[in-house]
Length: 283
Image (cartoon, rainbow, N blue to C red; front, top):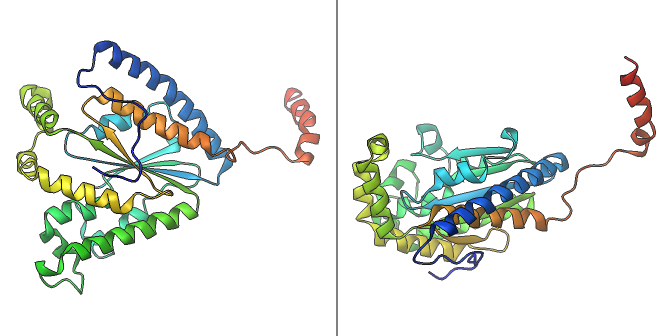
């Protein structure tokens, strides 16, 4: 898969030992505390936000990654949105609208669990879904050609360029799961009673379209990975390693913004600092 920017933070070997997993978990534990501190500073600074976009095939590990990477971040500092099938109200707007209104406020980290890219992935594999949007120019399946989806990708590029210019740091991660590992994870859901609820017969139907999805992902990533909104391809067969790669990328990116600093008191406030202390002590 050719991409604009591929992370090479950690190389995933065919055989992942217990020692490697334990080490990844230890590193993640340290990293998420650092991310928490940086987010606190970003919140106090109040000029930037961060949008973390997660995409991947079913069972790629998006939910558990969110839980483990952001476990130590202040609850007020991270907001997660999991986008499902568009509602009737959402379908009455353009395809990016529901994502725009879910963007994180300045000072916060927003996580999109599945993202605006579903509109050039799922809808490209299942073009009939587009008819629900009631787009005037779309009258038949013939109108849903490559040009249609590439125009959507350009709209996404413009959306991300706009929010980046207004202080949103955009990071996009594709959790690159192998077909064999997906089979193992689906079987696990079937074999473990308490995991049965996670399985859907629709998972098997989508799995048969694997090659179509891989083409759509490759095409979308190649058209939308930009300096202001890079894609990172994350090997996802080993969950601890995938989580570490994402956390390391988030931390390194936030750390690179050297202008994000805690605000300082004005000269006037500094001058009265001792008076405030005295007033409180004498209560």
